[in-house]
Length: 294
Image (cartoon, rainbow, N blue to C red; front, side, top):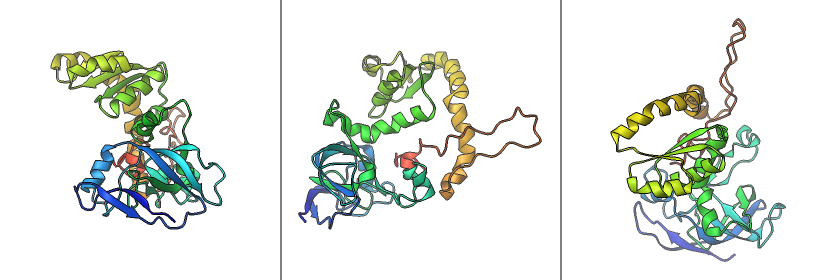
């Protein structure tokens, strides 16, 4: 089997240098991707610097990957050689625990990050379990698709979780790598979008991306004018529901067991109700008790 060539960090904070490794025999449920594009996520910088204390060197960073399927394992039926695909933060899980069976593979105790304790996408090829390799629509350019595989899903998922729709009011705090995508998603959902930024010169771009309102968070007057709106909307929609769930979810996430909401008191008057059955808090970093690690 040909060796995979890439750029690896050999020590915490070190410059990326040429590196090659033998990937071994292709697993029966794996695919090998010939990489054409890979995004730069801040999580890669955290891993290179070992900010989370989990990096093992040398390793190749990169987890916003686009490429073409170069080889498929014997049990792979969902993908074909030559097909354009994407691979994000996660590359594998056990596939049979209760988390995996519920479609919450990010909470699997045996989940594998694409570039955590393995080599990622700043290379000519990468391997992953076929379940985590996603076909890319032809209408989507590869350079635009790559950032959606981590930064994009980070902001898209909570909007789905909280049911953002044309009657929603969504505030996006920070118009940077994630924020600029969040504005576009919220706008596509039909929500009224308010962008918050410390940079006044981002207003024009924020509005062009779909923001209906822009608030410079360095201006105390603007914040005071928005305060009543923000508090009322936050408490009645996302913030209120999120806070109510978190108190029950933290122990479950810590123990990595499925969330089961408390049952109502049999003696109540029937008007009480338990928290919404929305499952584990998917806004957490890559589902590992923080969001991306993010």
